[in-house]
Amino acid sequence: EADIYQTPRYLVIGTGKKITLECSQTMGHDKMYWYQQDPGMELHLIHYSYGVNSTEKGDLSSESTVSRIRTEHFPLTLESARPSHTSQYLCASSEFSGGAGVYGYTFGSGTRLTVV
Amino acid sequence: AQSVTQLGSHVSVSEGALVLLRCNYSSSVPPYLFWYVQYPNQGLQLLLKYTTGATLVKGINGFEAEFKKSETSFHLTKPSAHMSDAAEYFCAVSSDTGRRALTFGSGTRLQVQP
Image (cartoon, rainbow over all chains, first blue to last red; front, side, top):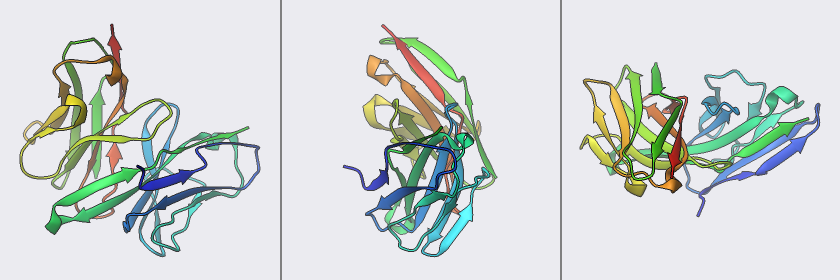
C-alpha cells in the first residue's frame, strides 16, 4: 500500500511539450525530494523542499522546476521537454522524529519519461 | 559533504551462495546509512537502515549489514542467495542535519545463477 503516489507511471511525449509530473503523499511529511535516475542507474537529487513554499535545487542541475503549495503535493514541471530529459524521476518524502526514534524515507514508484 | 562508493557495479553469485555487496561512505557528521533494492521498472524498496544503536542491522528478505565506523563501511550480506534476489542494490547515506537528503551510491547489479 503506497503512501506516496506518482503519476503518470509512464509518459512518452514529443519534443517541446510542457509536462508536469505529479507527486502526492498522505503522511504529512514536511520534507520532499525529486531524484533523477538515468538508464545508467545512479540516482541524483534534483530538487528538495523543507515544507510549504520552500524549494531548493539539488546536486544535479536540472531544467525542471518544482512547487510546494500544499504539504502533500510536490509536482515537477518541464516547460519544454527535450530528448535529454528522458529518464526516470523518483519522488520521495521523509520523516525525522528523533524523540520518537523515527527516521526514514518513502519513495514513489517513479515516472519513466521518454521524450521523442 | 557526503558520498557513497559501491565497489563492483556487477556481482554474480550462485544460488545458495553468500551474497556480499560492498559500500563505503564519507561523511563529516554521524551518518545514517541505508540499503535499497530496485527491481526492474519499479521504485526503491528499503532493505534496512542504520541510524543509531546496534551496529549489526537486520533487514527484510534475510539481508543484514554491519556499520563499521573505523572502516567507514556498511556492507550488505545474505548467507544464501535466492533467484528472487536478482536486482539492483543501492547504498545511501544521509544525516540528521541540513537538507537530510539521501546521497546514493552508483548501484550494484546482483545476478543469481542457478
